Image (tube, rainbow, N blue to C red; front, side, top):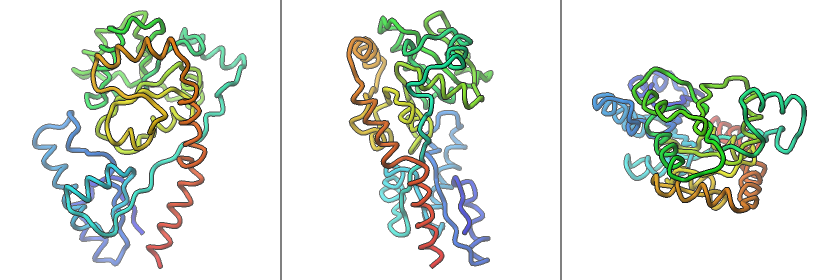
Length: 281
C-alpha cells in the first residue's frame, strides 16, 4: 500500500499502478481555494485534485465534507471513504501545578482569562476577521494569537493590531507549553475555512475549550452542537461578550466527550487498520 497525504503526486499516479501497488490518496483540504496561491497555482492544484479523483485507485478523505466535494464536484463514486484524524486528551485540563503557573506567568496570562487562536497566519484562516470582531466586542479578556510570525503582507497587516489586549506569541513548538496554554484558555477561536478535519480544532476539543468556529460544513461536521459559529466580524463581536457573561460548560464537555468517544487516536487507528486490511484482501 502507498498512502499519499495530499494530491501532489497526481501527475505520477501511473507509476505505482504499473507496479501493482494499492495507491490511496488523502486529498487534505480544498487546496485550490487557499488565497495564498496565484491563479495559475490554483489551476494546477485543481487539476491535481481532478486527476486524483479520476486516477487514484482509492480516495480516503479526512472529513465527510471533503468526500462530498469529490463525489459531487469530481464525480468520484467508488472506492471513496472518510476516516477523520484523532487527538490525545490534554492531560493538563483541570490541573494545578507550579510548572503550569510558571508557563502562564512566562506569557503573562491568567488561567481561564484569555481567548486563544492557534493557527497558521494565512488569509483563509480568517485571523483578521477574528481580530476585528474582538476589537468591536469590548471583551474583558485578551485575545492571544499563536502562529508563526512570517514576513508576509498578511502577517504585517495583522500585527498592526498588536496591543495589550491583542497579543501575538509567535509560533510555540514546545508541546507541553502549548498544551498548557490550550488547557487554560477561556475559549478557542477557529477560523479555518477550506480544510477538512483540522488537527488544531481536535486538540482544542481535547483541551475542553469552548470552540468558536468559522461557519462551514467542515467545522460543523466535526464540532456539531458542541460549539458556536461565526461568518462575520459582527457575529464575533456579539459572541465574545455573550460567552464571557454566561456558562458554556456543557458545550465544552460535549466536545471533550466527542474526542473520547470518536476522535481519539486509538479508535481512528483501528479504523485505518481495518481499511488497509480490506484493501489487501
